[in-house]
Length: 222
Image 1 (spheres, one colour):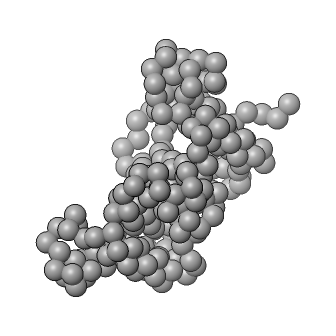
Image 2 (cartoon, rainbow, N blue to C red):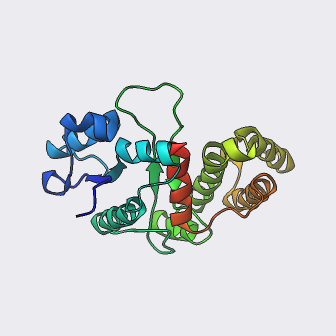
């Protein structure tokens, strides 16, 4: 049997793999989320990659060979439970990626929200919410977070680079606040953000949500 590195939580006790006694393996957040799910608290479902997997990466520079296969398996379970699919153009699942540890570690990686947003899923988001402005705003914020938090340490890309583009487009359309920008103007801003990303990272913003997830996991481990 392959060693377990990924633990599901949410959907009640029958679907949850861990509990609070597994803090060393799941980190504080992962163990507490599992415990709440076991208790019937309606936590948003997800999965935790173990500290053991991170330890192997730290020693060898590579993930355990079964880890990403297990991530895909648990992601599929999450999609089924939520009735949504990561990156889907009709009913997309968006996820957050958070770092954690057995003991509190101030300064760990910031949370990445809305992972799964791309040129296709933004339209699925708009279709589901009926709010085009919210869709393009979420997409541009995700590019900003992903560029800064996930790719920034290796590329020098920072939040300030995106802020400059936001300031420029607000000036162009005489918008006093971010909220004054229309859906069309935010869509234009998304295009600018993708150009900024490419300039610094030297590759296009990833449209494959699994690539987005793999990069985010890598950033947490690093």
